[in-house]
Length: 253
Image 1 (tube, rainbow, N blue to C red):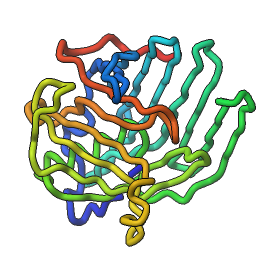
Image 2 (tube, rainbow, N blue to C red):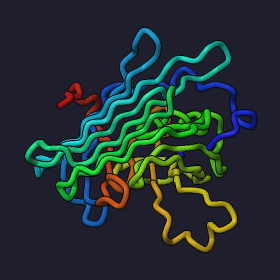
Image 3 (cartoon, helix red, strand yellow):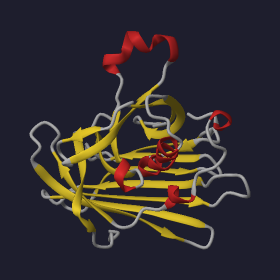
């Protein structure tokens, strides 16, 4: 869910923006901090860019699979998201939720089978150039951090199924101070991402969904955790990077 005027930031991502070695995370209940699953995210180079993939496995046998393809930009331009797919499966392996976006055509599909009715909403969206989705949002945020944007607020656009396909303008606010983040056990910079409705934000702030993410300044601003709803109005989850290094290769369903 994220808006960015590249003219006031850097015109392109630095080379590290697409660096995401296989990384393991523990999935926690954010209220109890009890482990409820584990996940692995990774970025793999392709001939024209990068494939970012992630698998979230829950102890109750539910499974989430996310795949994004980013295309390398031309000279002076940063990479761009070209397609996104996030599919959630029930414990029995059947479809629960799916969101898909083709950024070249604007075609977007959202499927909700949580009630067993398999409701599909499809449309063609008009997409701003700075549209991101899912874990790919980490790339522009890391670029803000590497540019020294602590204490600043930036903007992006983000795709989400809410529950129909939608593009949200979002503000990205970076805490000015790095602080110890207890779940991770080390210092991290906190970033808050929330939909931006302009002047009416103060009136509806308590009703707006938001995401918190943490990045490690001692590890090239690696993403070390986040807290958000699993899907639109879904259960909250927290991901925390494990400290024992790389994870095993993510396996698609």
